[in-house]
Length: 68
Image (cartoon, rainbow, N blue to C red; front, side):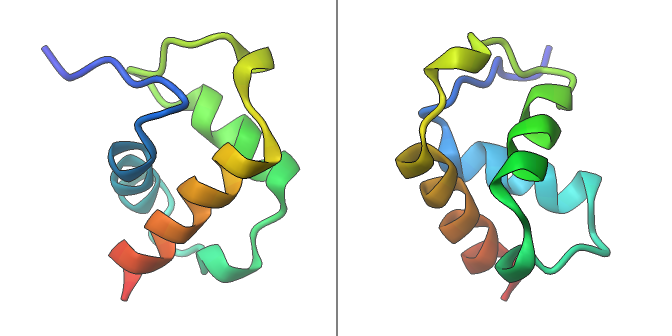
């Protein structure tokens, strides 16, 4: 069974987003889209309200690092 993801799992979320959206350049993603895409991941299980700009930025930075 895949690992359950929460907002604090920025690296694992970034890897999952890279696999789910290989055509996207994470440098240009809007945080509103990023928030929705994280929630849409099949193994994401966390309260949408626990997200913050800092968390989304950490996910974005990890995604950029994985995409390079």
